[in-house]
Length: 288
Image 1 (cartoon, helix red, strand yellow):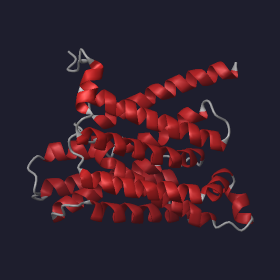
Image 2 (cartoon, one colour):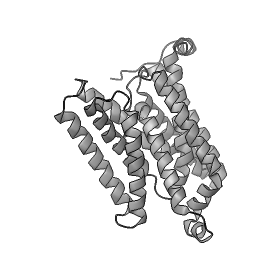
Image 3 (spheres, helix red, strand yellow):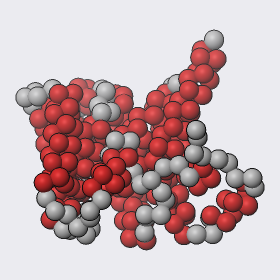
Image 4 (cartoon, helix red, strand yellow):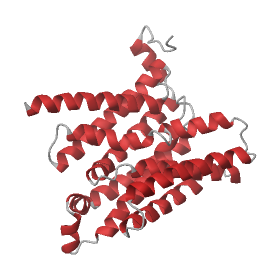
């Protein structure tokens, strides 16, 4: 039996909820994280490197477990540097051919998850609700009450940095995405720009984990890009389509979570899946 139900007066309920700061916090964070994820997702999907988000999100979970064991209140001080360092190591390992990209990501994913969960189990942390903490880390907050002003401020700052970096180096990222060999032959430092993309991807993963969770945040990278590719054909068109789609899905996800009492992260991802189905249908109609 379903535990969710739609309120009788939807607009009145929304008006009441949006009078609270925590709902606006969730909406702002969801839109910013989704926008940053979509911008990076287009490049990562085209380079067949989209699963880097999945691997780094699991690394962030492991780093969060380390922060919990050390009793660090602001786990961003541990999670962000470790995730960025691992992104750099992952890129260099793949580039040097020692371990193929997909194998390195798989190794990081299962390794970080295992180490993180093991640490939480064998040590005494400040929280006694281990299963609840792990569930929140993996799938995001089950409610939208957990984001405070500090979370929102850090999210806004990091998101603006990511967006600025992306548009400042837009032409170089475009060049490296479509023809890395040609870009390298023309003197472009392709390794540097690949590194830049990996680092800002790690930043996006970290800021999105609290809302969406380690297991779901990579969906925000993949789905909007795939949806936009079904309809738009140019790189700029796909970027624009993915950005708009991700923000709309994020907004609808937060609203549905408010009305139905569902987890925010899962709601956003499910709406992204619906959007992909709609865009796929539109793409087929256009092709005919």
